[in-house]
Length: 169
View 1 (cartoon, rainbow, N blue to C red):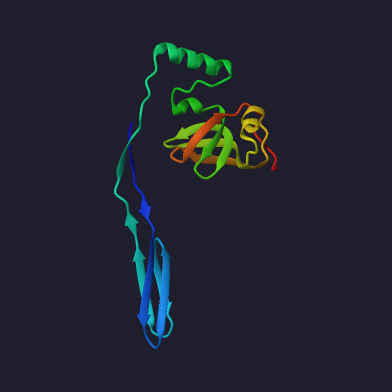
View 2 (cartoon, helix red, strand yellow):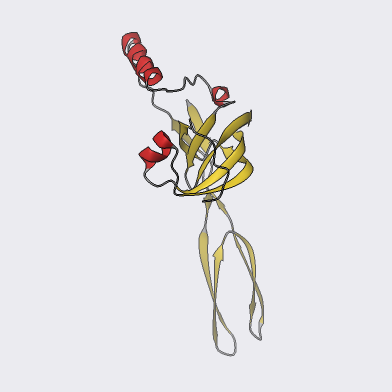
């Protein structure tokens, strides 16, 4: 599997100007900034950077048919869900961990690289993770209704076999 990553560079610009004294202006950020230098004029800083696309190669692990059958049987025995494609997630409830937040909800449909979740909740604190997944116990959760989760940000996902949270906790 091959993918492309495009990043945005963030820069810090320091402008030093001599007028009736010494004026130091610091601009931090991405985009266009306008800074007024006291009593002299206006300085404009433009800071934009884009990293070169990088090719990513995903590794593939091969297992024998016998090993695959044993793994599949073990997952099914433990109440696992068979997922053959992203569309297999539709109609089921899932706990998603992304790079910056956690969501739990029922997958209504796939919209390109997004999943539409119904009865979704933002999970601020899952507590002990095994209890969260096994028993459905969450320390802090806020129901939000519908939500879209970007599959590019998902780090992992777990089948949610419990009632979806409907009260803030």
